[in-house]
Image (cartoon, rainbow, N blue to C red; front, side, top):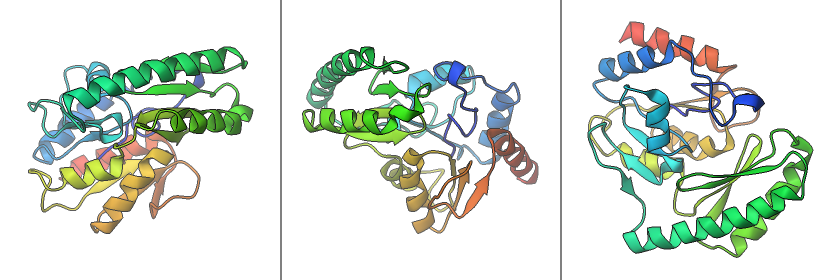
Length: 238
């Protein structure tokens, strides 16, 4: 189970919207998918279709938008953690949040707002001193939009569906083949991954934090390059 940004690809301010993908990554993911009998999955805040565009022809199970989008196998349809009417209400809420976020961002140097398919992201990568102010704005905006929750991250304050988190999605996935009955390994780097680490730990799995900082994960790797090396070594042993 692999987070994407900061785990499989490095964070970089100038490439945060379009990540730089190591040319080794697609082949490595393809081998892992085959070697694990299909039990290799991307667990990301990015949407399923966005990730599929970045991965190209490589098709894997994907838990996207912090688990709000659930695709348990490459051939499966994307399941959403909401009904059709709830999804329409959510999209209306995202429009409101994007309007609010864009107006707020225009008042502060180094801040920008991004509208994704199912989330809105306030970026302050270039103004880290604005973190507290950005989180305060996001919490207040969530108070007026109860269907959404603040997801703090590295250089971002993100509005995600309130009923989505990586831990719940991972727990759900572990009840489905080919994941059921296996020991989960989850690698992630950010605050959004902590819920996943906690679930994996509770299942007797292995959780690995990429980069510095306190974490529920008992193991760590320094960089995304170390992640690729580690995954390569796993693939050789399978």
